[in-house]
Amino acid sequence: MDLKLMILQTCTGKMLSEYQLNLLRKNNIGSLIDFYDADETKLHELWAINIQSVRELKKELSLLPKCCANAGTPDLKYETGIENLDKLLNSVEQPFGPGRVWELCGQPGVGKTQLLYTLAINFTWKHNQPVLFIDTKREFSCKRIQDMLRDKETDAEACERTMKRIQVVQAATVADINGLLKSFDQHLTETRTSMQTKLVLIDSLAASFAYHRGRRMLDARNSALTDLACRIRKLALRGVAFVIGNVSFFGNDKDVCGDDGEKDGDDEEITRQQLEPMLGAYWSSVATLRLSVELPETEDFTLQDDGLRYMYVISNTYGPDGEHCLLRITDAGVV
Amino acid sequence: MTHQLVRVCEPSQPEAIERRPSVSHENLEIFYKSCWDISQSGTNKILTGNKALDTHFGGGISLGHLVELIGNSGTGKTQMCLQLCLNVQIPKAAGGLEGSALFIDTNQDFHPDRLKELALKLERQYAHKVPEFKAHKMLQKVYYVKCHKLHQLMATVLSCHRHLANHPDIKLIVIDSLAFTLRMLEDGAQRYEMLLELHESMRRLQRHHELAWVFTNVLTHRYVRKKFQVEPALGDLHSHLINERIWFASSSELHLGKSWRTSRLIKESE
Image 1 (tube, rainbow over the protein chains, first blue to last red):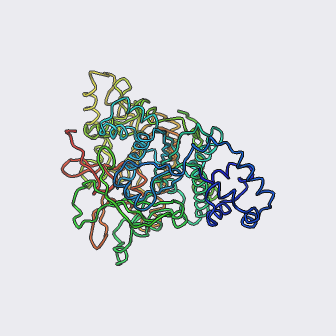
Image 2: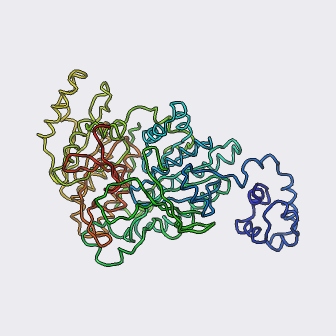
Image 3: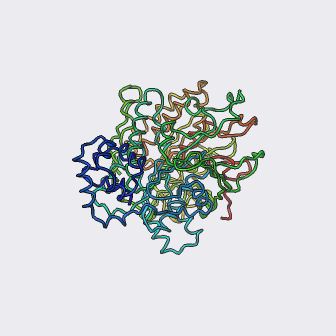
């Protein structure tokens, strides 16, 4: 079990800040044994807390019940169930696992929701654990889940079991999402190990921010976003994985005009601009991995969709970015 | 469903804007409903009348959705709107919702005669199942509002909660066409603002009432990557905020999808 998590479970450890905990790793204290071996005065200087507290912390750590070690092993890996995606994730050194915060971007209609549904189904299927699906657009469709399961040729009983494990909750605004995550956190504290839900999917975050617009709302938007980021990080520390849907557009015209198109395209800039996810610069640092689903580029715009999508890693906290893989959207989900 | 008066902040008051968006007081019980429970709950779909589309949607347009009908003029968008206004009234005995509809008309495309024809057709279709389902009653249950200007449209949408207080059985509100008045605004930023304002009030209404919004949109040209492309009007964020987009082609085929490239043909044979 992670040293950081163990320290957080002690009374004294709870007083420490994220920064102080990160200092441990910087000073090569990665495991419990390292921590015991570390000099008390060194820790005292490192954290700028008194020696008494350091001793207290060590004592409390030794008293921690050992049984919780099996609650979350650090190497525990999840699989997305999508072969190409798993390969890609391994190659960028960020396999799907507890505490991951992923963001999924893409143009409207590119298949983000389908991918989220696939992840939800695969996760309950493979790991036998419930997932929480936060729906901001009242869009959640049991029919689509059912159809996907049917196309996977699952029998009625397994189908029912899977569907029972997908918990759905509506949240229309950011405040709602924050409230939800707060009560999720409370559940986690109260019931501890009985909490099974280890994956939260949000579809889509951008939609819940559509009402924060204009200069007047900018501060409210930033504060809500920060609040959300804190809550997500807090839950991630306790082993909950997140996949968050976001939307991205070409160019940076998203805040200014409702482009009806007749007048834009007057400069060369647009041709070179990249897909840009919503929610600004601050949010871009929150997720540990940002994935972008894109249509393959073709010259022929009359071409009908063949279900092929490129998945790009646009930012990655733990490894390289810029890699991509090929996915195919089918009736049974994404493969 | 509670029929208490919906609290709507007037957007003109600056302090009201500060308070938005408020936390909706839905229960924050998170581990309450699973996908299975939802699939077991009763019907809440409006039949579209197009068999293939209905199969695809699992029985029609879901209440709680924002659905956009898009296509060039004369491809049957308004026809579908009128049909939906009638289909929402199908009695519960025949598996319908027994609701009523509000039709917001912006480009004067509403023909009572067309509606009557469709109603008579529907009456014949259900005559053996529910004989008391009559065309003249159907017409009474389609409420009609005419909005020439954008400010009228805004006012109508914002005051919809009052209509709903008087007629709690409204299950469908149609705006035909949404793009028409919005595109009369020259200023892009203002248009965008108005559009999002509309979206917000539509969603707010859905938080308190089980109803579907259906609106029509048109296609426009847009210059992307040195090429002219045909795209839906009203922008990308709008595309993201709606739930479904149904494409009407001149060949009377229907496609489904947010963008034309990713849309799928809905075949009759499915």
